[in-house]
Length: 616
Image 1: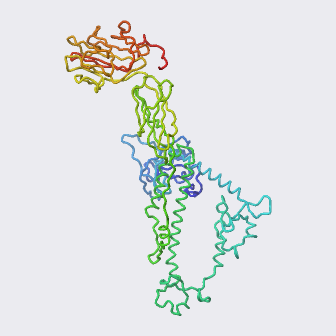
Image 2: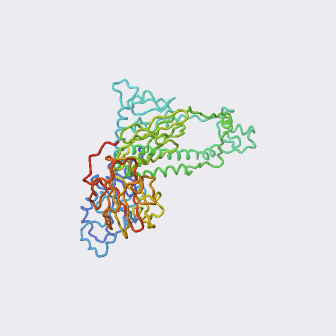
Image 3: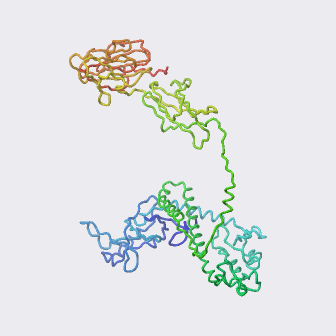
């Protein structure tokens, strides 16, 4: 990962890195050295040197709260070879800058992609500080220092041991300089050993492996022919794919074969090393990038992560495409034929016996309530749930249970295979507890967590077109009703009440020629082709000072089991009906001479408000 943490300008670990507009990073001190200003020959004012002090201020260090990118502008070549930006023409009508006011423009060229970015009035303060990269570099340096401090010679007689200078990869032993010369000389059996720097000490003596490599090169034995001990290999038989000596050729064993010089074939096939080096380089770069990404993810700095996340994701995608799209295709010549004998592997595969794993069937696990989908509307509740992922046990159905809205016993309200259920007809202004469990042939699973749902404290409803008489005409989203017939027809509301106190109003929009409307409540099976209240399934007020523009209020108090009427906000005497029990729906009867608009979701009139009673 160390290559990811080095500045492309100085080659050292980043110091106060800033993010260029191209998403590459550079040290702030290095940015000061590569930032240039437009040469005098390209400036409109020949006395631009007078503003040198101001220009230095533009390149000063900035606070971490500063932000903003310089803008992209195509770069040009100045006569002196420095990459600079073209001058930005002043807007029409702008006043000319005073002489000696400073340089016309400054620019910064990325050392990696060579894209130039202009510096605005803030100078380098216009580039964001890469705090995330700075933190990773600091942690990397601390880890390397700790590793270096812990690397001690393993053969020293002194106490404490000397710091390690090299690590032998074959012996897996750390040596100081003195112990290396005494116990691990670069000759004899140690000549081929590779010496590397100890952990945390890049560039330590012997860290490049030169000592072992040199000894290996000087002491390498030239291979001799297997059939002729005194002859060295000098030729290569392409047909036999094996090296041969002159003695082999003189004996005629390869007289009809294609024989070439050993050195030429070695150079021809040495392209494999080039490919290995190429792949090794790509692997190192990809591994370093992945390690850097892991370090970025470890940092708990959301703002710093978002600064570099887009560029980092793009780099990872490019690295992946290089491997997937064949960027590393073999570069070996056609004569270098590699084959793979897959026959033994295929035979082994054919001899395998595959069996189907059967998991023992047990009761289903706990269902998970999907709280984001659970909701209430008026006196209805909707619940949704799902099974946990990676659940192997089959589910045949679910059991949904709900209490009575008053902390009582749970009761089953749904049994089936669906995972979404709506329960209607509950009490208003009540708190319900719900839970669900799954079952299969092995039994019933455990309950889910209990979810608490609160129904509306006031009712919102409209006229119900599905239960209204066919002569009823509804409009205004089913909130306004009239009739096509001269006879009285009944329409009900979409809400049903069985407890609590409820209030709604009906505004008389049109009132002609003795229409005789009736306002009140009814049961679901009320007769709908006669005036409301003419049978024993409705309770209503007729006439009673109603005229065009009047507002009739209906107060249904099921705590006291009575029904009271209001006209234009004034209560019309004592309760009109008492001792009423059961389930009731708002109701209205009218003919073609009347038009009424319904208003719901209203608070109970102040004169009858009482402390909320416990739910029954």
